[in-house]
Image (cartoon, rainbow, N blue to C red; front, top):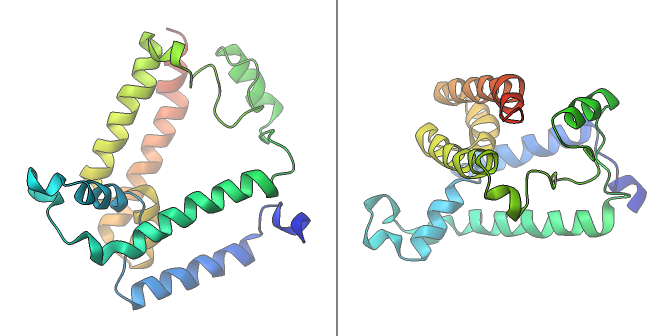
Length: 188
């Protein structure tokens, strides 16, 4: 049984499960999206006292916090018990290209240690990638009115035109980052 669970599920299993979950969320008047939980957590911690955006009844969104807790617990269980190995399946061509950019062990860990470590955080490249990138993700999520999962899964299933525009923007931004900006950062 664990062998079945440790493999990626085919689209014809995972797709209908996602569709059923989305139908149930829409039926009960809820929207899916992980970025909304940051607002919930800030409201729980009292940010509503100094910012009107965080001043709302977070208890109505408790189901979303339970969903995030389930995501964290599920991720932990998957990594601890369902992953046959930690090597990431990327092509040899990609590994060679990443090695040319200064990541000789690409694919051996989920987060490349050449980027995600305290020493590289204090470099210009690290500040741009981690700090500026993190700010842009947070700003973009707020400006777009939600994250990629919220717009791509919930918003599109609810036929929201703004979500379609946001998803197109996410893909265009991702392609620009992958093909133009990130490679030029590694030549710094």
